[in-house]
Length: 308
Image (cartoon, rainbow, N blue to C red; front, side, top):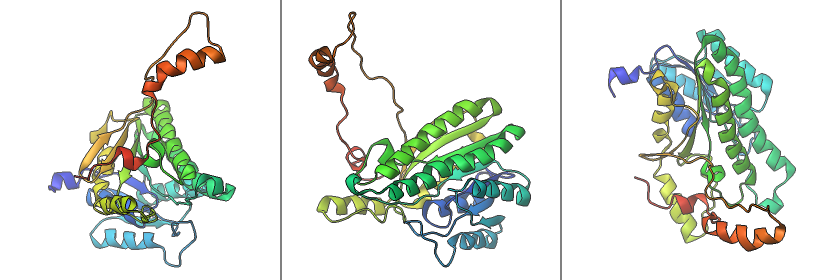
């Protein structure tokens, strides 16, 4: 990496949530290497949301400082609106501004749907969807005043495509993509950008994937070849001024592959001048549309090739 590339974010202040390990850690370290001053947020929780004795976020701060960068730790929860406001306020207090928020924090409470509790659903929605809203809203007020800003949200193929046992996570992550698009539309006049990344990487979040059948074990082995550091470069680019005009998009990063994901648009339509009845829908509309139906694919069915 050249010195010019390393300082791509010189003068920028970036908040990375859930940055104590995995993808968030690599993004925080990469942002700092590229010249950003970083607020490393991590509540210090287990995969299921339970608080751990030692907060790994401070360790990431120590790494950044040891390498000559500037960073501070924040231990608030993204699921709390006041906590999100404190994160952003801490960035402004410590470094004078806020330029980018990377919404990476997350938990899992995987259950097959008929066994999923209200608490399982609520906890995941609060961290992923409410968390992205809270931090984005807190930063948006500053972005509007300064006439610039970037939001980078982590979505998931579980929401974009589908997966077993993740109705809560999938609903939250697909909600995040809609949130991102709405922010991009509402905030474009203030020069504020909002994009999503669908990351494929082996991390604490993916380590809970079942690996009982040969097919599941093969999928896990593919995931293990996709390391969290591969997600950082696109996050850094989207946080930089070089990404001006890139907004409202959903990208997938899978090892050395970057894909632009589709967004819902009409595929096929039918009409009857006299209108529809339930019977004519069954006789005419559904047979005409059936060829374009989506199968019940999971992420592994769509992204079925070995990562490059």
